[in-house]
Amino acid sequence: MSSAETASPGYDGPAEQRRATLARPVVVHIPRRFTKTEWGGTETVIYHLVDELNKIGHDSVIYTSDLLAKAGADDVNGVRVRRFRGFYPRWGLSRAAKTQLDYRGGNYFSLSLFFALLFTRHLQAIHLHTGGFMGAMGRLVAKVRRVPYVISIHGGSLALPPEQMQKLLAPLAGSRNWGKILELVFPIRNVYRDAAAILCLSEQERQFNAEKYPRSQVLSFPNGVDSERFAAGDGAAFRAKYGIAAEAPMLLCVGSFHEQKNQLALLEAYRLLHGGSLSAARLVLIGVCYDESYLQMLRERTHAYELDQSVVFIRDLPYDSPDLTNAFAAADLFVLPSVYEPFGIVVLEAWSAHTPVVSGRLGGMADYGRDGENLLFADVQSPEDIAQKAAAVLADPTLAALLAAGGQETAREYSWAAIVRRVTPLYNRGGAEGGQTVG
Image (cartoon, rainbow, N blue to C red; front, side, top):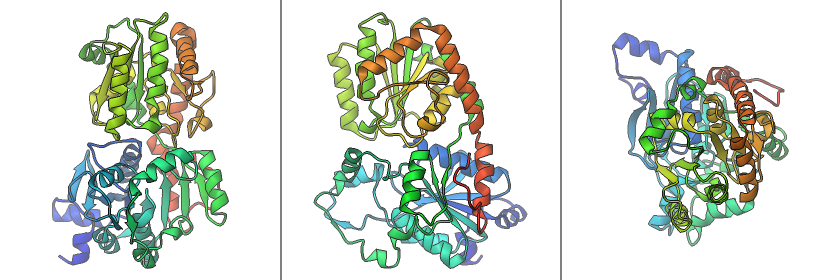
């Protein structure tokens, strides 16, 4: 077997099947990291894109780093993943700083990923889900192999609030960057400029990038949702498992435990509700823990408010766990209090479960949310406003039903099959020219 064939995605199986698979056009997706145990919205998007592409005749695979996972080949719910070793090109990074970078924002370098990509057989296109060095490697291979590449912005810096950007860069303090040497071969600054398309999750993000890259094709490209899965949850099973009475109003928030997700404001709002007419209400917080100190602070605040018996914390729940879909079905209200959210895929998941939503007016919600029709917008900086909007929905079954029905109707417009049909033209040389919105 040639080295080039060894580097191709392939799969283990009969020789005839393997040759047939290798003859299919290959689209390689490159996220900064992809692990089942640290699953978030980005992983959800990439998983469904790859899964749907494979269904329509592409041989799609994920090439990524070994961050928070072991290097080597893996299978994540039927999607093939190859993880490659690498490093941060900085001197003086502490172990704690490296761990923070692993979770959020580290600029990782992997030469083995570059060569695997360079020699992948039948490469049709590269879909980047990260910039930095990994994005620059995808750019260089695309140019050498004469294939198009596109880049999706899952949490772009242009729309990120300045205070959030400062916290993202905080682990770099005290270290020295020697990666400028590597940029002579892998110029990071050109990754977005040279892409066949820049895919943005919100109209605000699209406008920011269109201004910065006026010669590039910048598209508003939404995420999708597996509506059937979230419509099939068993709410009674979730309540029974976590000791929540059938008649107790249940508020749900799903999002990583990190300051950006702003669960503290929701906890403060819940305290106001619990101290009023909704003393029987329960709050459920589900998420992967990106910041142990933030989660500990939330637990301590819950204890100080004497709400230990009323607030349920569920951390690091696998995305494919029945508890996740059952939680959406069990909830009487879903609240998303994030101060920054590129899209808000969890809102689509709540809508698919026929659950009304209260959310901030930001990210994708500002595009697909209609106040009073499919959700209620709240000021996420104000626990009082969050509490007021939540109380309005929980106290009015007619309003709750109206919002749930409107949301469910909106969610139907965002199937993954429809999203993939819109992205595949971009994998051909030239792509879809001239448009600004895909969705």
